Structures are given as C-alpha cells and as structure tokens.
Image 1 (cartoon, rainbow, N blue to C red):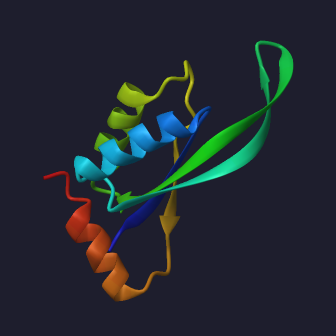
Image 2: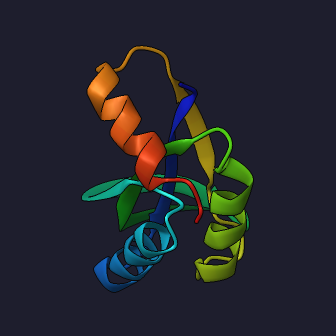
Length: 105
C-alpha cells in the first residue's frame, strides 16, 4: 500500500481548516492534521519570521496529483510549499483505512 504524508503550511487556522476539510470531503485524504508552528524563511530578499499552521494529509500515491491540484486551487500563498513523504512502515489496518478513505471518489 503506497501511502504518502503530504505537507503544506498556511498563515491562518481558518485557511488550514478550510483546506483540511476540503481534502477530506473530496476523499483525497483520509485524515488531515493541523498544528501551529513557527517558520523562518527567505522571501523576496528578506528573512521572514512568522507563525504558520502545518497541515499533514494522509493519502495515497495514486491520489497525489489530485491532492496537489486541490492544494494549488485552495492555497492562499503565491508559492505554497507542497511536498510528500512516502510512509514506509505503517500498521496494516490503518493503511487499509487510509486507502479506503482517500480514493478520490
């Protein structure tokens, strides 16, 4: 079962909740977790320090293109960070639940 953890960040809890709900409602992710973080990054020649919210979506490799497309559609940033990490080891019943609930149907 080829599962992915897809990450992105947004500036507000409201944006995070909107994106999380859309991914789950569209069956692109079985689950999306939201956590507050502090980010430091370079943008337009300046070092920026801001609070953000990290989203972690549990999905499948098969659904990744649709997840990325939805994130690009819904994301308020000009250049959103969207990246995925393959989940190499996973409890088999949980993996089946992810596959059943992230089928894009």
